[in-house]
Length: 348
Ligand SMILES: [Zn+2]
Ligand SMILES: [Zn+2]
Image 1 (tube, helix red, strand yellow):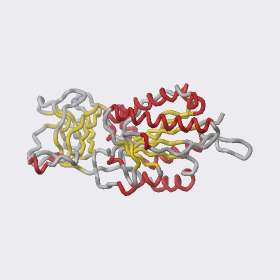
Image 2 (cartoon, rainbow, N blue to C red; image 1 turned 60 degrees about the vertical axis):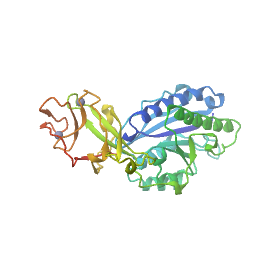
Image 3 (cartoon, rainbow, N blue to C red; image 1 turned 135 degrees about the vertical axis):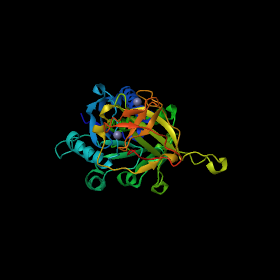
């Protein structure tokens, strides 16, 4: 039986923390559930999932639909697109049966790459290798999750760069339905013995085809900070989003930061294992930030206290001093004052 290999290459960088990541996790489960109800897909589709953040790993090896179990998605700092492509290419080499003169191999694999930000690693050699030896062997569909997720390199690796424009549960469900339908369409055409036609987002209300000229490379839509609870020592991520452009702050004369608080999330302990810790990130002044939260682990009043070691910790406001879970020294706190304080941002 010739299989139709489908790879999901999923960006699990820390800017995905919260709704985006849990939607993607549920979306994957839903998608596989729906595919199983289609006789063509059930017969041919095999699914594999690669996650990437600071590094890339196969979190679900290539299996047929009945045996596929949706994996838990990790979270880490960094968007290592180069590493994800390298891994994808080696998976294609190892898991996809190539056609030989004496034997038909698998159908042309389909890759769905979902990402929400620009790459942070050196992706050049991986992209060149992809273009030279793999771009004709697989169909790559890139979905930029949000208008700001686009970057020029995405257009290099695929002629099909789509932008997911939605932001609600319903929008995301509609997006997953489109992915499911496009996989089913492929499995139907290979069921009839023909190579599948290319996808088009025409029928989807939440997707649009991106042109390279649409890209705004300067837009920095999301800022994240990594902190640690000083009581439980567990990590969390604080997320800020850039204000929508349609709010005119000058007119409102409001004294607010450029970025508004989007959420503070407890994150899994394997965060560090998925993070590329060699990358040094720039600092951000707290006067640019509007809104804050308490610690998601211990409920301490602020999750954005800064130790002398420049790491972020939580603070409950009652004790004079606490032990920093990063550097193990006792630290006391005072308010940051009108000038704000400079804190190191996460990798997004
Ligand atoms: Zn805490
Ligand atoms: Zn410290």
